[in-house]
Image (cartoon, rainbow, N blue to C red; front, top):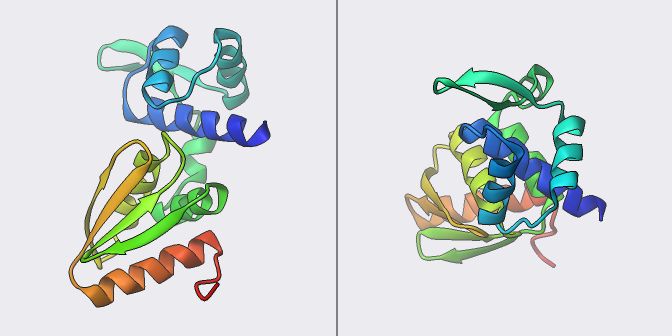
Length: 159
């Protein structure tokens, strides 16, 4: 159960960082869009545990991460390392693309961390619900990025 809680709270952090979420009902709806079903009581506990605060955003009061979370995630690569270590990940090559599969609702966080890391071999990323497509400039770059991602996952490539 702890893994689901971590996944849900990670999704909440990503959502409030991305857009203005004014109420717990809006948060529940946004989580449902990502395939995360939960109760209002659970959301209320998550809001308290995460220490979410209300700030003025887009001329309305909306949830925001407390400063400790913002400062803790200083680089995209650090964020990517945490995500890759915590989530089940499958990485496959498809020509000049890498296809990264993970839990529903997690792909956007991985793509955002990759974009923030600004790896020069990655031309761009597209995220769905549970899949990220990474565009690489050539096959050598695709192989290097695949190895780098596998290293972040902690997977033995030869297994």
